[in-house]
Amino acid sequence: MRAITWQGKKKVSCDKVPKPLITHPKDVIVKVTACTICSGSDSHIYGGEIPDTSKGQILGHEGCGVVSEVGEAVTKFKAGDRVVIAFGIACGDCDYCKRGEHSGAFGYGNLVGGIPGSQAEFVRVPFADVNCYKIPDEVPDEKALYLSDVLCTSYHAVMLAGGVKAGESVAIWGLGPIGLCAARWCQIMGASKVIGIDFVKERLEVAEKKLGITVIDRNSVKDVPKRIFELVPGGVDASIEAAGFRFPVSILHKVERTVGLETDTADILNELFLATRKWGRHLTLRGGQCPCQRYFDTVMDHVKSGKFDPSFMVSHRIKLEDAPEAYRKLFNKEDGYIKVFIEV
Image (cartoon, rainbow, N blue to C red; front, top):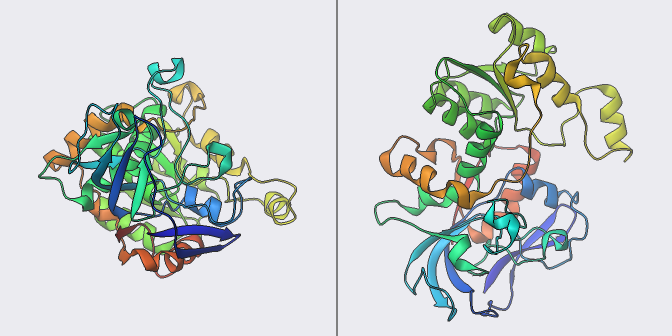
């Protein structure tokens, strides 16, 4: 089969590799019909920032498709079912899973299990009853695909911010797919004002024109907390960091990252603390990988009803063989690339 494989720092390719086999009774094999590239996590692995990644590993953790083979212990799915695959792998039986605290990921190096990813024509899904979710007939791949990560992760981000109540104000650092979708969730929950911060022109345009939120362009605003206080006297009720660790602000941290003295920076977190009002969410810092499985029902209900249409963030539709070029453009933020839909 064809698959996108990691070949080294800033180098991926579309290669012929062996098709996966069922190796455990709880596995299914999914014929992938659509996948995408995560502009955050996949950029980290593309840039060589994820340790213990082996040459030839199949990438990708966002995918949907049709079940083609079913392990004998799988009870919820049969061949022919359309499913979306959670990016995080859960067994469903351990104490962590019973609390909905899932970890591990497809296509993300040996550090999190070395499980082959979904940027491929077929993918093996372990513990399928836990990690697959049936797609309703009326929901097309173009919408269902994004439940695999971005829609659930952005919802999780808003939940980590304490949820949003009607009339509250929220600031979001980073207007990639997660930040844009977090802004949409805030609107659905009744936020009176949503402020988005970024420096990429196309992202700012989508946020302002398609979502109608207030934007701050880092290219022209140097003191972001000061600008937020001008927009919301006293500061916002909650702040969400959706930029990732590759974006230093101060000269010191830019130099330290360049010469390898640090891999991440607290610059943006410092801005969050300064911009959030006194007692705003009690200034509690919370994070952690999203447990997609916990949110599937809620998110799908919003997609089915039309309250949340993820197509607003999709900038390019491509084929699997175009993925290596898309990786480069997403990493370098070129040609308006925000989120791709890869038709497999």
